[in-house]
Length: 475
Image: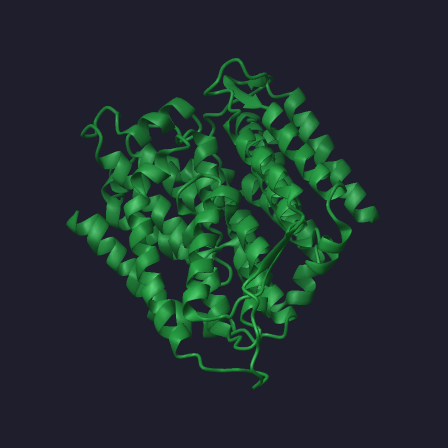
């Protein structure tokens, strides 16, 4: 535990020093050199390849590598660029990001659902659709951790890898497209200034089409599964049991706290740094909820769920590196987007496919922010200005036809970052968590390329192509 204490002390000292000096020597207009993007590229490359090709080394060292690269980039900003503005924004958003994911993960881990139903196409599809809707309320991570074990138990006599793959499609990714709580990219957009209700207003048709198309594919697959592993007639009572119900209250509090945004409600206490108001009330409430939900959880439920802090710790370590190392990429992309060449390259179709491709093989959260930055910079807007982000989302930006183009840009980025995250195991955080739990339960999951070739390309990619044709070409 010594390394954890030392690293935590280092990060806290780094954060406090940054905040204490935030108003001195800030030169946010200084552009970083192009080579400073290399730590970001290296980190994303290791996140993509580490669990696959050198898992032992990565598992033991990611907690040093990710924060270390982030601190190096931040140090360059302080020493060479004399810029504390960008690191302060990055750290504030990181704290808000982790403060939401942590209570959702912990509280859902203290809930156990046991359903004594027969695993058949109708029952399974119902659970997947309910889980997809639930993902918008407690996040794809929370819904995945809450439902993957009941889903496996439900199909204990006919379990097959395709069931887990569709679970990843429905609940770990596409389901959480309607609210900022649903998926990390959308929450980052909310932190930047995208209104909370924006996605459900503008992405609902795309979500309904995706759910309908996936449902058809799943029903065909599941109807062909006639396997009965134990070859014994099983009696199902049709009853279900939910243990740890108190944790639903904690989940509700964590979700409601999201709305305590000082940029929307000026009466909420906050810290103003370099012209931007950062909340601390919301984060304190959410982290307190996380602690209480674990402290008050039923121990037998945690044990039956095999609850561990490892997944959320991995998210915390990786994302502090991501948030800090992606600062140069955001600034340089924003600068490129203001050039004539950049403006010509940015359109609805390039945003959809470029965001989607990178979200498939890299983490979809920084991909979302990168392309939001580029699309806003095309019109001279700053992604770190909440008022400008809200104007972009509303389609009320000077130089854009009112109510249309900027909203289409944002829709393309939002849909692609979330939907394409299901194309690989590494597209979204819950994907690997679900895969690990399935393998722990004895399910032989397809390899990285097996998942891509057998399921993602023949099933998911045609749906994503139709989404593009219908909603971004025809309509």
